[in-house]
Amino acid sequence: MDDNDLDILRWMYPGGVWSPGGTDPRINATDIASHVGLDRTAVWDRVRKWRREGFWDGFEVHLNFAIFGVGVSYAEIQVADAAEGLALFDKLERVEGVLGASLHSGDSATTWGVELVAVMMVSDTQTQIARRMRMLRRLSPSGSVNGPFIIDVPPCSREPTPLDWRIIAAIVADPNVSLSQQARRVGVTLKTFERHHSALLDDKVVTYAPKVDWSKLGCVTLGIYCRGTGDVDRVRRVLEVHFPHSIPMYLEGLGNLSPGYDPSCCFGVIVPARSPHGILTLVPDISRIPGVRLVRPELWGPRRSFDGWVYQHIAGHLASPRALLPKLVPRPRVAKATGS
Image (cartoon, rainbow, N blue to C red; front, side, top):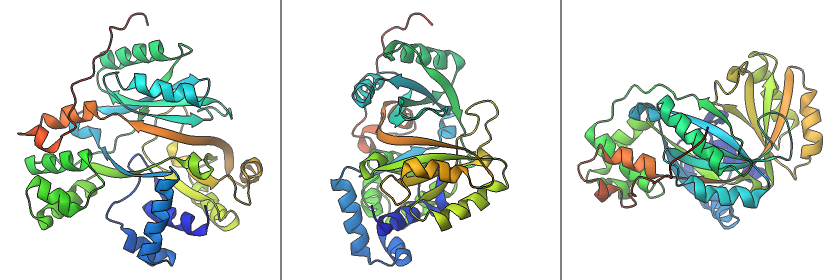
């Protein structure tokens, strides 16, 4: 990873915001090129290289689950190593209401070197949440699961129209084709599609996230906990000046993770481990910045999304669901859970 890679990544996240939604798809390669001093072809060459290296795998669409009347939470399962974590992915796909999983090194306390699988799931009724947690304990190699931790869902002021639901179905099924192709699939003009698509983005009904594996580029993420809200912007400015290989990111949607946690005092930093400020020196160096209370390292590894629950609930709003959701799958079957 060089300075051009870092500049492109910074512009993919407008305003330096790392959130469950990630980025705005209306910022295209031409927009990024104009800001980073490259031409459009050079930007795409970088992205294609990321794909070859296994770092970049296009975009995925995240929905605001408020439109389904539910929230989102996650749980943590400790595993022995990455291989055990990836094997767990296949089992998690069969649990109703599980939306995805990701492999992390470094737990939510401060321990470095622990392998964890973070499991994203629907947060609906207490009965269903308790049932999913029992299933996760059955699948956990150690039988232990931390959580559930609530992820903040932003308010959604827009009630999707029938056309909105068709557009949502199309972009969820395949977010990596052009809007003109999506418009043809939905059966509307490009202008109509773009108008509804922009409204869905502006009203926080849908958001896009790059599918990336930071570990492929030798990157780690640092959680920066500041002593107060007023310290956040100042600490970010110090990082941008004195640690130019870092990418500071505001955190969104991560409230209520634990008692005493205040997301307004926190932000994240993505750091190439091979940068001049290696991870072993970077953590203590950042810890000495006035206003920093705690620096927590993690390694974000492979992720996998499970679409079954989402497809089923979108399909309930469509007249012809299979026309727009060709990958529509039956509701996952789960063995009866026992124990607590």
